[in-house]
Structures are given as C-alpha cells and as structure tokens.
Length: 241
Image (cartoon, rainbow, N blue to C red):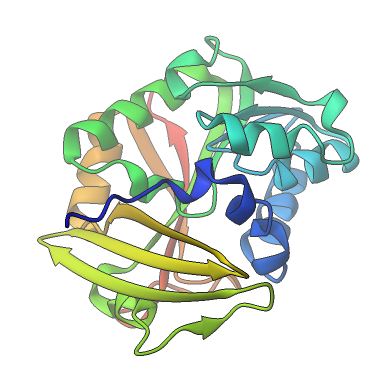
C-alpha cells in the first residue's frame, strides 16, 4: 500500500515542539546581532516559522514583519511574546510591500526551500523589491559538499524527549528529501520534506541575476571565513546600483 506523507509544519502536534527542539539554534542570536549592527529599523523574516525571531526582534527594539505561508506555524507565531507588535503576513515574499524593510532575512535554511534556479532567483528578486534604499538581505545555506544530510538518517527510532522519530534520506541531484516517521504515545505520523543543496556557483549566479551583490559572506556562525569544510555559507547582500 502506498504510504502518504504529511507536512511537518502543518501538523500542530509536531510543529508545537519546534522551538524547544531547536532551543540552541545559532542563527537566532546571529541575526539579532546583525540587525543591531546594521541598525535596521524594519526587519522582514521570509518563512518566519514559529515567529521566535520576529518576537525577539521586537523585544530588541526593531519593527518586525513575519511572512509565513503555513497556517499552523503562523498560529504558533501569534502566541509568541510581543506577537501583537509584529506585522504578520500569511503568504510568501511576493506579499511583501515594495521598499518595506531595511533588512530582509531567510533563516532556518529557508533559502533551501526554493527547489530550482528559477525559484531561487524569484525569491531574491522579491527580496530586492521589498528592500529600502541601503538595505540588506541575509540568509544561510548549507554547504552541499559537506553532505550534512547524511546525518539525518536513523538506523533505529531516535528519542526526541516527547516521542521518537526515525529519518530516511533520499537524494535526487541537488535535491534531498527526508522522510521522518514520528511516534508520540499511540499516535504516528509520516512527514516528508525536500530541500535543495545548491552549488556555490548556483547561489552566486542567482544573487547576480536578481540584481544583488555579496557584501559579506562567512563560513559559520562565528564569522569564520568560507572554506571547503564550512558547514554553512552565510550571506549578507546589498542591491546593485
């Protein structure tokens, strides 16, 4: 019998654990510090997820716009502290107003959800459109050469504290699909997600095609340089003239 797969982010029983499961994620403090350094008055987060970053941005004194297509995640976001001070948009980057933000972010590896070069260029074009003069776009992408996705497969169910999960990983070119089978008490779910692991050249070509320019790039959350073994490529872009 063919197994059907759900969307993790649309399943409240799973998505509700996201912030606790990733409590030590390094991108949140990194982008909070970046927003401060750039003195960004308005920050837009494309793919805002549970809204944790937007909440923290408001707490830090910024105006925040959270863009999230998934209704379940948006409901979680609206329960965050300071959520009433965030402008929430259920949608995608297309739904951002022109010249609405000084800093546009794609955190949590959102940049890898655009599964071909056309989609990658399009989201960058939308980000550029939504930038105010002198503004910045920032995001991170996993270095495909490191093949981090190999770590996502489990030989046996793995305890996550509130249940178990067993991951299976499939590769198709630069697309990686991970299927996760969750067990919580007497409930079971199977979810599937596909991410793109683009080459460095594909990332850079997309940036250029969107009329953006690499202002800064790092190979990790401690702002080290980019090297062959870097797990992350962290970009800060500006608009070309």
